[in-house]
Amino acid sequence: MFNYTFHWNQALKALPQMLDGALVTLEIALVSMAIGLACAIGLTLFRLSGNRLLGSFASAWVEIARNTPALFQIYMAHFGLGNFGLHLSPYAALLVGIAFNNAGYLAENFRGALKAIPDTQTRAGRSLGMTSLQAFRLVVLPQMLRVAFLPASNQMVWAILMTSLGVTVGMNADLAGVTQELNARSFRTFEFFALAAVIYYVIAKAVTLAARALAWRMFRY
Amino acid sequence: MIEIENVRKSFGPLEVLKGIDLTVEKGEVVTIIGGSGSGKSTLLTCINGLEPIDSGRIVIDGTDVHAKGTDLNRLRRKVGIVFQQWNAFPHLTVLENVMLAPRKVLGLTKDKAEQIAVKQLTHVGLGEKLKVYPARMSGGQQQRMAIARALAMSPEYMLFDEVTSALDPMLVGEVLDTLKMLAEEGMTMICVTHEMAFARDVSDRVAFFHQGVMAEIGAPDQIFGAPQHAETQKFLASVR
Ligand SMILES: Nc1ncnc2c1ncn2[C@@H]1O[C@H](COP(=O)(O)OP(=O)(O)OP(=O)(O)O)[C@@H](O)[C@H]1O
Ligand SMILES: [Mg+2]
Image (cartoon, rainbow over all chains, first blue to last red; front, side, top):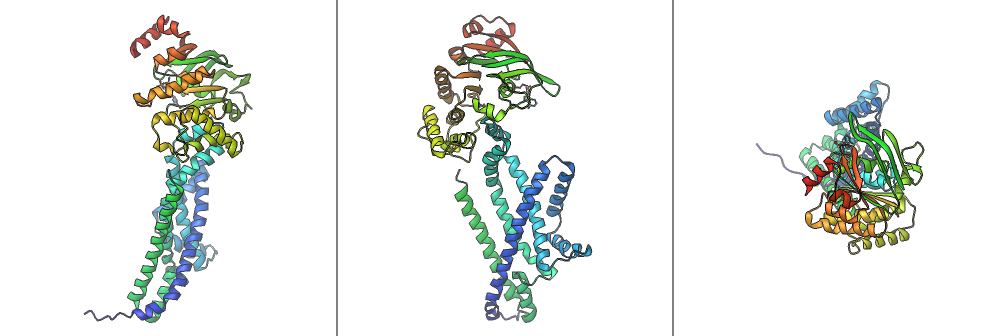
């Protein structure tokens, strides 16, 4: 029955190649987080603006990002936009898809963080003569960051793991893509994917621990 | 001088201030007593422009608080307020709490702001707590910090809204002592309070609010000794 012999050598020999892929994975995750963060700030402002059109746009984004599979979001970026004549490379499609997803989750995260800071804080700032912008920047925002930080770092881990969905749109440079190609050539499926899983795990764990350490340093109160 | 003239204010259908007239002279201490919902807090937030009014006028040293074009941020430097809820900025140390507005609003240097903050914190008895975060302090200490924070802006007027009513009874005394000290130093103050002994002790005048109306105002001896208005008598009987 069980006659599969492990060939770890082959997988280990491919390790440098896979680590290169891991760098691409990290790059996509980081850039998609940066874009997602910027979009999430925009979406949050849209939702606070009181403008119905902007508000609905932001809500629709958040709803779709959070309630449809990330795979579909990446598909849409690749094939969906392709139907409208906008052809994104696998790399770009993956980036856009994940950034879209990140923005949705982060915007919701920001909304929660904003709600967590009582109005009395703003009022205290205003009553000391601060403008509303000062009260937000000096009093509310630093407190929001603390509330939003760890959930945002979770999203970063998600972004790293989501990059593996790139294989479905032909992405071959990231860790999952590299692994998939090695697998197709050698059929050492278990070894390669096990090794890839270990690398994903190490990266994800490192991000989580780094975030915790950073939070501990930044939010001493 | 704070001049309040026929001020009316509603929240939706509910008229909370029904034509309040009150003038507070420089150096005077006026306490406001009265039942829950009588509009005491609302009046204070109208005085420093945190809440708009519907009609009437509030004039502070010649500046109409609610007139178009009044720079409220500038006005609020002159009128400090401390609330019932402790409003410490939790992400800042005690010292940073007090330094923040002098630095960012008044534009003082870090050294100057720190000097002022240390002075005010020492004044309210928190000179040993400069590096502590508010979460590690008692309610009484947090309230004294809030007072120091307001004082650091060198206000000419101070408004206090039941600053002791969220405190454990044990901690009320230290905060009231701080208020008394300010009164003795000549600060112009309007204090909303449920502490009748305190009101009697420090006030030049005591105002009794009832359902959005200032039913009665007078010297503490008169209000507590010989209240004229039936509602004042009822209220005082209820809190004794
Ligand atoms: N922002 C607001 N929106 C709607 N109603 C309000 C608002 N603020 C106060 N009110 C209402 O106005 C009335 C007067 O409130 P206010 O807080 O001024 O009373 P108060 O005399 O300070 O009472 P307390 O002794 O309980 O603090 C209350 O009925 C209150 O529910
Ligand atoms: Mg009140």
